[in-house]
Each structure stands twice: as C-alpha cells, then as structure tokens.
Length: 121
Picture: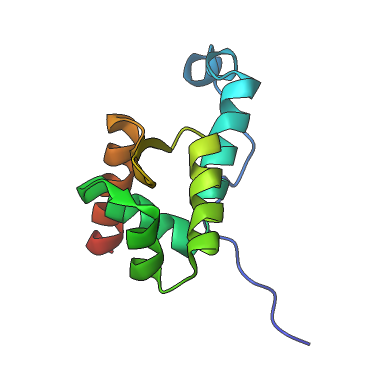
C-alpha cells in the first residue's frame, strides 16, 4: 500500500475571520463567474489559443489562420465562430474575404499576460 500523501499546505486548525471575508462572496456575481468559465473553456483549446495569439498581432483572414494552424478552412472557421460567439474575436467582410481580429484590448491583455506568466515559469 502506498504511503499517504502528507498535506502541509493547509491550516492545522479551522479559522476564518470575517474581516478578511466580508463582502467577498457578494462582490462576484454568478453570471460573471459563468462568463469567465466560458472564456477560459474557449481558450483551453490549443488551436484557439494560437488564433488568439496570432490575432493579438494582426488582423487575419480565415485562409491565413487555416494556413498558420495547418488545418482546413472549415476547421479554422469552426474555431473562429466559437471565439466570435464569446466576443473574443470579431470579424469584418471585405469583398469575398472575412478578416478577424481580437474583440478588444481586454482580450489582448489576457493573451499577452498569460504568455508572459507562462514564460516566467
């Protein structure tokens, strides 16, 4: 039988102080939590992370994204629809092409900071 794992990163006795926790529970609405979960789920796919990274640098058409990911245009479009549905990406049509970019600076910041955090590890 394996040795039990020693837990050293928990309190040895239960303690809670209202001065630390007052107002925290009410400061975060459930709909905001659900929105954040959906955003992180969307970005949990490697191809969608790559798309967000590429779009952080410049606007790209669906064909460019398919080429960068080495996937079909249909697959790239599928990922882009998901990112667009969650307001991570936005699109514009120019002639027969559809160009995508990140929806706003919050997403750009999220992508940049996440990559920076990863590189520090």
